[in-house]
Image 1 (tube, helix red, strand yellow):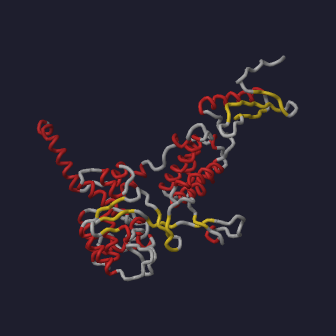
Image 2: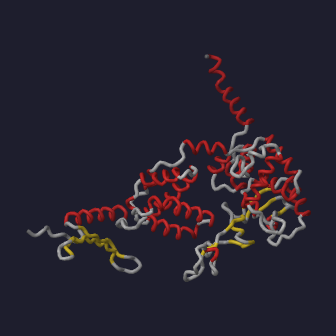
Image 3: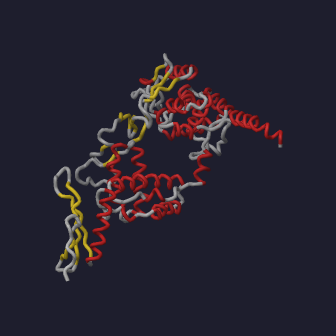
Length: 426
């Protein structure tokens, strides 16, 4: 008996391969660039299965404007997404995303179809990371990267929803503990640190002072240039930061080297329009994380410390950096971190046994301290403080702020005063 005749707009259902398979087709619009019809099709072993696929596709088109791509796998899409995203990413950020994709995401869910990934699959990536003995921060980073990957897939109709949104975020209680371990120095500790720094040579001492007095990031300090320093009016303009940029293959055909850095035609692994200035080796000056041109006021004591340093700096300085090594090259961040630990020991804040790589009180504590003090002095003006230290939002500034003992005491005293009438009646 003949089947029911399908109306225009219902889509097509017909036999193929000598009746062994059924094909479902549906035209859902016209390509605005080529003018050709946009056509969806799928095959199934039975007519009912083909009809089910057709109805699912039509529902997806009504909901999302186009059928969901059910063929693309996670590895293929993640690498394609990263290649497109690189144009808007800092090289260090892009390298971190690539590492998370290569080491943690692809080995676990890389061969799954993007449209088939569920929240449980997202959680399995986290479990695999923790099974390797990696830190919770690594799992959180992979979670963030997956969120970006699958959100882009949702927008491009490769999946209907973002499964990361419904997957539990790594960290939880552990995250709160980690955050609490990063704090700010007390006033007494800051005095000891500044005194210890003042006993060092002018170059090293002024660099340590700069950390506390400006709240600048490590890369911004190591990439600070004399050209952007105005000691007459007492301010510094943050235009650059120091960054190591890797090299990648630039050859059109395989050169035989596995590492891109060894390629005879190696090129810097950044987008074509990425703004940078090459200094030495892999070191470059690149634009800062926050807005370029951020003006940081300098207190008189900081100005004097910088003047003494510049007057006594007679070594080679081909790149015009405020601070550099003995040969005029940029200071390696690892060396800067080691010198920071030496300062903590000299000030009696840490013992030599405690002052080890990865130990407590990194140089970022100076930034947290500067934010805390500025927030107290400006009566909590997060926007103003954020403009000085280069935060993207007031919320970020609030995260960096740590209440000082005097503030806690004042807050509790105010609370006691507010509740005193009630307490006296009880």
